Length: 196
Ligand code: IMP
Image 1 (tube, helix red, strand yellow):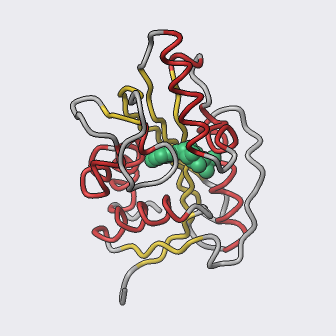
Image 2 (cartoon, rainbow, N blue to C red):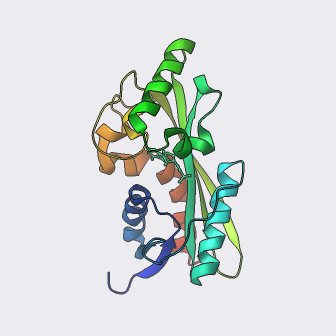
């Protein structure tokens, strides 16, 4: 996109990169993926979403010498005591259908289907400054996965006020209501003001 300011998105997850690119484009920013820049993925050693987002954003900004944004996100299921939370990717270990089955079984056993997605989004500069914002989306676990769109746990999560899962709602709706969109709304004001 000509004339767009570039911002590094510190993720190797194509689903997240696509969502951030869609959110940033209307603000005149071009999203560049960490993979395209040849950046390594730092270990997520913090014990909360905000800590992991901060360490990923700072590492990327300093390695690339440009402003970077990172998110750390996950699904917190009431029947799992808030898990898998920061361990969401590791909980699935690449086999989402199996993870869906474990989550549905836990919810059914507890008779408790509430869940929330959380996104911590950190905007960092190469000089070492960073600001972190949190977005949440509350909802329920679907009794069976539904929908082919999206990524990760999208097929399992029905946001409050909707009957369909994130996967069924598709990017047009998800990008307006998601945990990531809510965190991003707070960042957008900063970017628009030229604080990035
Ligand atoms: P992270 O890269 O450590 O933040 O991993 C977050 C993990 O949480 C992803 O790999 C997914 O499993 C899950 N996750 C986070 N956001 C979403 C979403 O919007 N839809 C579906 N799954 C998500």
